[in-house]
Image 1: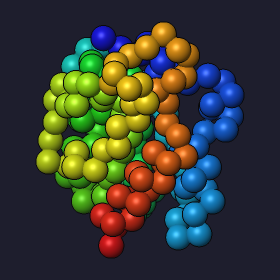
Image 2: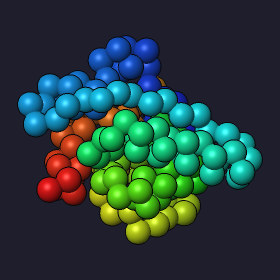
Image 3: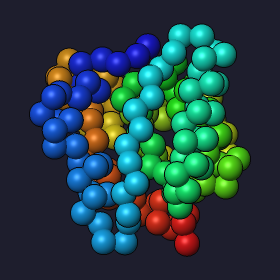
Image 4: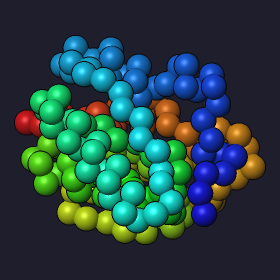
Length: 152
């Protein structure tokens, strides 16, 4: 399992990223930065990148983190680890992920209580339509609202 056509974000989607746009245009939020983290193959490296991302957020003294993953299945291991590493540091976190019909993560933890599912297909499955299951402005607004609630 991994990234399929409908969860792939096109270049145009990246240039007009709804999550970045919603956060950047919210008067209550000071956007500190964007951190892009890969999805390593090995579990040791998976844990390392999550810890490093959380350490970066802590060093930047952020008040909260919005985390998004563009894959699913095995990518959720990295995602869950990063969320847990942030949570253990006391950093509020909310996120976005494709879940669809499976409706659950491969792994989970106590900090994964405000994740917005950006599945758009009626059947809740991966489709052959490029970009069908990607983050929308509504998804981004929901995730940001969850984060604001946690930051209170």
